[in-house]
Amino acid sequence: MAEQLGFEGMPQRLYTCTPSRLNTWLDCPRRYRMTYLDRPMPPKGPPWAHNSVGASVHNALAGWWRLPVDERSPEAAGSLLVRGWLTDGFRDEAQSAQWRERAREMTERYVAGLDPSDEPLGVERTVATRTDRIAVSGRIDRLDARGPELVVVDYKTGRHVLTADDARGSLALAIYAVAAARVLRRPCRRVELHHLPSGEVAVWEHTEESLARHIRRAEQIAAEAASADAAYRELAGPATGSRAAVPRPREGEVDHGPYDELFPPRPGNLCSWCDFARHCPEGREAAPRKEPWAALPVDAP
Image 1 (tube, helix red, strand yellow):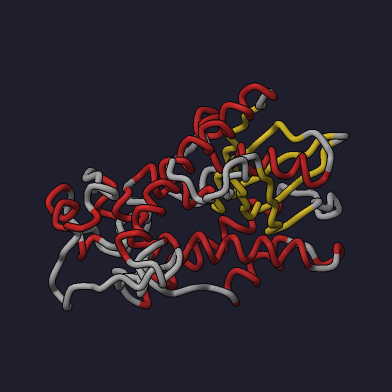
Image 2 (cartoon, one colour):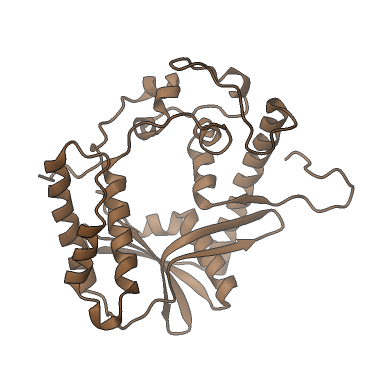
């Protein structure tokens, strides 16, 4: 990792990040560069319908918990979903309307299984923590208090039913658990993925050791990304700071040459879903671009 402070004995500057930033580096350094470093950011592709579904459901559930307790009914959750429905990415108005109804039913069914009086400690709550290497923050969908312990709850609306292995392996959930425990000074080891389409809940009980392993992993990822960030700044010039204004090719041209050694592409199936596929010939060759509504379950109307 490149030195960031020039005085011997001075502490190394913390790498400020979110779980999304760390995971983006793991998935594809080129996408990481275009997302977090290139300024202006390269134009993205069209929005995704499945992201509209997910955001609409998350917003409705957050709004439901903010209602007075006596107004927290399944019908109220459905009404919030309909009022806040996002239409980006759908094939047409008919598909959007079909999915709005599907999402409303999904949200009402989920809320019907909740106790409206069981007040969470946090809804869409931002938590943060730091080690001697990273300063990491993120937003938790819901933070529950169950007895003396905290539980991290993450809502999922995708087509794949999740398992305990998904909860166990989630870097984000582990970071949230560590951060919540430190902020609120209460134990937090249990993480849950609530899959609304199926009603399944994937659970994992971390140990102190498993949480520590995730934090070490986050530090290792951050060290790689921070080193590449520093080299990027050197290439971009001294006056531009961490969000350098890098000269970009004209529309329709692609030139990643100066940065490919630092930020190589990682072509694979995920390239079909990349927002920056239009700027990445390797990604376009690896996987065909999907329609914006392609991630919606195939059994949908």
